[in-house]
Structures are given as structure tokens and as C-alpha cells.
Length: 270
Image (cartoon, rainbow, N blue to C red; front, side, top):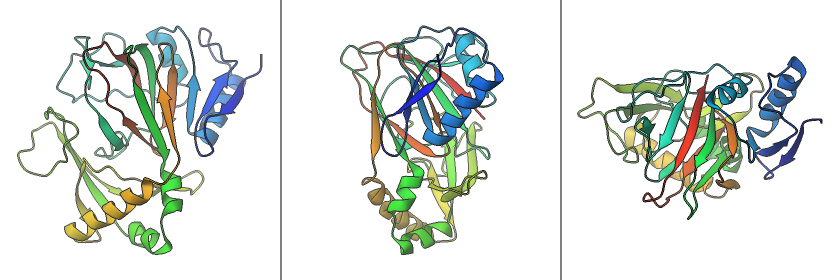
């Protein structure tokens, strides 16, 4: 059965059909999957029952698995290369709460290239994650706003010892687990040259190229423009497997009922 892709929106995402996750991937299959990932930036496979090693094998088609230590809550998962986003497991991380649009690990010199989530337990009342394209945001900016954004870098700061990951950070009272990195506000793909806006409000602490006040005002303008772009909203079901390009897409976790069980298996990729 050939692998096929059904687009999810006009700007990002495709559902994948015809993939057997229980067998090793040959070179041809891997090439088709990578081509689809490069084209759509987000790939969804619905209703699968896979183990942690099978998930890791699928992830390795797209990059090198890299679990970065630092999140204070939760023990290390037993399976190599695996984490759990969970409000019930002892080794769970980031189990509760809404997360605004962001990209993972801009506060590291090398942000994650991709992320994969596999839905193991989903609240009966529902759970949603949404994505939007950094390139679509760039295209939505005026010529003047693009030029201003191109000249700016953002200093991203994140302290893994903090308990509330939704509050914007600064430089005060940072722990030894804090990470900082200076990143371009407009990133370009080395392969295609395609631009994407990198805006994460809760981790941006300062700016290079403009004053702090001017930088904050610039982010406000970009954030407002970003509200106009198309989004893909995913309603999670158990057995859903989603991988996306963390450099090209922003994602956000919507509020859910924290009294109900929610566990997703996470594979981070460089």
C-alpha cells in the first residue's frame, strides 16, 4: 500500500496513510516520509497502537532523538529517548495548564528541530493543541514590519526550576538550571531560505538591535498580525501520533480538565 498524504489545512499539516509503524523503515519509505514532512511541516497518523521503541524508530526517520535534562518536575522516563507529558505519571512533566503559542527550546543555542507526541490517555471532556505557521505570520506582516523584524534578535531565557511555565521571565532570581540564548526574530531555513517568525512571549527577556521598549512594542505588533493566520486545531484522540517542525511552526496547548487523566508520550528531535 503506497504512502499518501491528505492535507489538513491550506498552510500546514497532512494526515498520513499507508505507514506500518511496527516494522523497520526501508530507505524508500523513509525518503517519502521526510519529503512529506518537509512539505507539510506536520504529519498526523490516527488510531495507532505503538510502543515507545516503535515511536523512537519512527522519530529517527526525521532526526536525532535528544532528551535534554533540566525540567525539575518528574523523574526520568525508563525508556531511552522518551518523555511523558502527564498529570498522572510519576515521571510526567508539564502535566497541567494552558500553554500559549511557542516553539520549544529557543532558549537553547540549538532549538529542537521537531517534536512528536503520541496520545495515550486523553480526557473524556476533550483536549486540543493548535499550530500555526511561522512563514504565514511573516507573510502577514507589512513590508515595514518585516524590515524591522529582520534587524532584531531576541534573548530567550527559561528557568527549569520555575513552577509556572506560562509566566514571562526576566533576569532576576534565575537558578543554575536557567538557559539563555540569542535567536533571530526572523529565522530562515538553511535548505530553502524560507523565512519564519520566531516569537515566544513567555521566554523573551531582552533584545539586540532595538531598545527593550521598542522590542516589546514590535512583538506586540507581530503577535497581533499572527492572530490573522490560519491555524490547525487538533482534537486529541487516544492513538493519535503527531510530529511537527518546531523551527517552522508554533504550537499552543488549550485548557483542559486537569481532574481527568491526560498522558502523551513525547519524542524530542534535533
